[in-house]
Image (tube, rainbow, N blue to C red; front, side, top):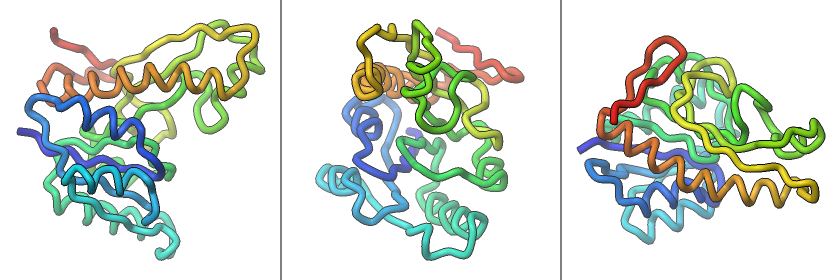
Length: 198
């Protein structure tokens, strides 16, 4: 059984998708947020999952917050840490501490459109396809070995909200599968590539 700690900042819809998937061999050990009023914490508590919050505003800088966050996470002995809408840029020290066991999902086809406002930027650039990417986290923002991607068409009448909603459906499918592949030891990192054993 592998312990998973999920980090959220809001409603945690990807967290909910992972929990609801009831992944074989996985135990959701805790859901942690940097916001005490994050909707996803209440959702997790209702399902008997341990929760905690740690306000980044209470700390003097990113390093201090990340060190405290790592201490909180490590109390649950995680095999995998999953970022599910956790809206914090993580320090290299934190990322290094969880090397090869820290996953993120980003709402674009990386390496395109890193950072924020991905849907608006995709529409503005006139791309014909967008999507989402699950990747191992490295110190470089929205980079790191890619585990899986899903593609959706960008329609002529799309606005950012419509495109985001269509991509979110794919996120909720893709992320639980990527976590399941990690738990089942089907993923191998080779340089910047992730190889999946069937």
